[in-house]
Length: 110
Image (cartoon, rainbow, N blue to C red):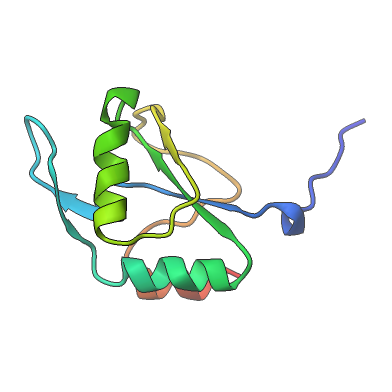
């Protein structure tokens, strides 16, 4: 028997790092450069809803400290960082929100 998962019990909100939290320099090293407009306020709003923002990035674990330092420098209240998500053309997921801008995303998070 399949057990149903109550989405109301899930508190983690996965947020990609590159091109969602920050802009980067591109090839060859993808150095984080600047925050995407509205990200800091969006993370505060996510927390105010009782949810926990985590970074879920395709960057390898060797870049964990780079991501962590960028978040600390910009005072982003992130729960933790997960490195190494698969590089996929598309992700098919029943809990996904497509990133366009932070204003639109925040209106969809409940």
